[in-house]
Length: 288
Picture 1 (tube, rainbow, N blue to C red):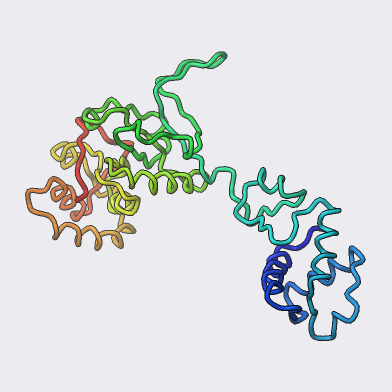
Picture 2 (cartoon, rainbow, N blue to C red):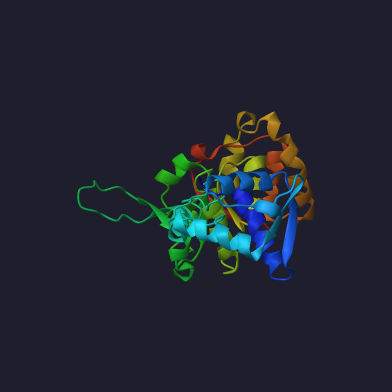
């Protein structure tokens, strides 16, 4: 029987307090009840420490608990398993805390890279790789390109006109429930490089808001003339109205000649275009 997670957390707090005092009492509810059941399972005698209302902890009791944990190959008291990946939890003992462990994709991102042939695999125009953010040397890349939609990410070709001025752009999928955490780790680190962060996603109020929230410095969009001709109310549904207020506030801060102003004016007319429909010359539009 594993030591319940909330009992371990409570014992860790008791252990800290016992460094300053001889004993600590805790009422027989919540995690203490779990611990009493665990102690009985392993024949740890509580004796006079246990009353009808509370359990009294002392250094001797905690030593007995630690001895049982060691014999069961479980992590000792004072070692929190929460936030650790399974491999690190395994080094601490046989116990695994799935509810609070660091997810296996916590630091993983999907990258769209130049072709990398491998034996037994067909040749693709681009190579899609799952990598650990911490293994990347960000100084090797001239810009970060964040692609919102997964289908567009898989087929993205960075030789577009909007990226001609950037050496070795790092193309990354924005992320979802699987890769979102790794993406946020990467953008937090990228922000410190002060290099351009370009967003390629749907041209609608929500998409531009996502770009702003992610720390992007530029949007990648079709040129305004082409987009004005092809943008449609069908791609800017009414449910996106709540995002418009923030964009209007941004619009009034821009000089009339700012390139972004024309794009925001188009959104205010409730016209947009999803990324999969983009064609024509692509340009970089600053967000500030």
